[in-house]
Image (tube, rainbow, N blue to C red):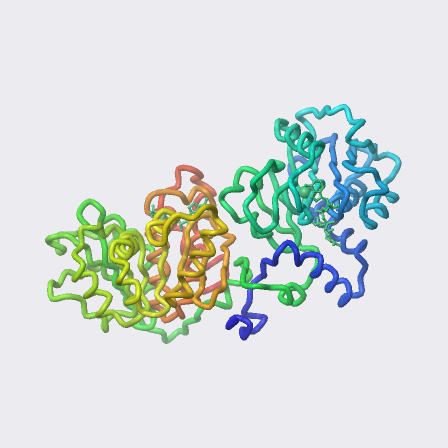
Length: 502
Ligand SMILES: NC(=O)C1=CN([C@@H]2O[C@H](COP(=O)(O)OP(=O)(O)OC[C@H]3O[C@@H](n4cnc5c(N)ncnc54)[C@H](O)[C@@H]3O)[C@@H](O)[C@H]2O)[C@@H](O)CC1
Ligand SMILES: Nc1ncnc2c1ncn2[C@@H]1O[C@H](COP(=O)(O)OP(=O)(O)O)[C@@H](O)[C@H]1O
Ligand SMILES: [K+]
């Protein structure tokens, strides 16, 4: 695959398959000269370090449920490290100790006497609401539906309102695909080293709770050995995808952007995209509203200009072009085909621009190579048909990107950037408060802005998606569910400050 040619430093944290976790652990232990018990100790330590920082760390009663494998072994390390005079730790074992993994048995022998241990079959099934539950029953080793005892336990725990923490994965959740059966419903999932793929699926929102990725010291070079084509985009990755400007840079260097869209009643969409492009650093931004008399249109900020010439667009004048926000579908085929014919640089296509491709699929082939499409799930479904689950959806996104040589940004929580070489990059920034009208238009403006600043399409997509999510996080800190798309725009400059991209 082409991405193998990238330098390690240009790459992101790989998301590796559940079946490869054991191989990764073995490789890491061999190359670092550490034992599996030491690695398990690190996993437990990283969990406890996180735990002691939480507001609920003062809770006195903690119940740790342990299965027979190394996930259970992690639970035993956690129980030992959490133990102190102020806490009552209860360990509930799902299997007889002699049936458990070697590292489990070793850690079982290290439990202090003050930790109370009971077999599940003897456990009275009582937990008060003011307790913490640690689920270390099953991790990546789950390989069959839950048997009777496990299913009974998980069903019971799911009815409780105690604080629920899942170790590595909520028990019952497969690492790489959609869950079909019963799964532990966590308030927090503390996953080791990299997020397992299934933790990024919308189907599992209710069972994962807040996702935290804990570093347990496995080096990225070890993880890259087992990498397939999936990566997790984090804050530390962003700086190297940016371009930097010098003191003599002029307006032209920052690019001239054209945004086509905004039919009657929907001109707000290009207003938002245009404002976002300015806040992302564009030198000049022109809006081309699709209304009868464009020069009567008043942009929301005076820095935005209007392009209203009837003679068509002279695309050579622009450094980047985005088509679609608020454009409407009342567009004739030859006009749209004409647009795609004339433009010869990668474009951004969003919203109705994508809906038009669904209406006229014969035009997909005309998209300039490396163009960027930014559908949400519904727009994507119109384009390629229905997917039975998110796993199928991300595969279809990848197939589309590779087939047409474009970048497909599938928006949502953990937005996927599907690259034309087959890489899948999942975003870590953003939150639910961004699910508000116009938030997607803001993303379009940001990506168009980076393209106009002569970022490669790949870097424009990566920086656009990450900064957009980060701006949403910053803006929501004071607004929560009252946040609107304009708040995201106003937070864009702060993302550059926080990331030290100046
Ligand atoms: N040294 C290592 O390998 C490390 C492993 N780590 C932990 O180890 C976990 C993986 O450990 P394992 O590979 O032992 O797997 P698990 O502990 O996830 O589970 C495997 C055990 O569960 C049983 N099992 C599978 N499905 C079941 C079901 N439906 N009902 C009942 N029992 C079922 C299997 O027969 C096996 O005994 C990770 O998720 C992580 O928590 C961490 O400690 C980091 C280091
Ligand atoms: N739960 C969420 N977590 C993170 N980002 C989200 C979440 N919900 C929505 N977003 C982001 O908000 C944007 C919404 O875009 P879109 O659906 O096109 O909105 P609109 O059509 O209103 O402009 C996308 O970039 C998406 O990734
Ligand atoms: K678990």
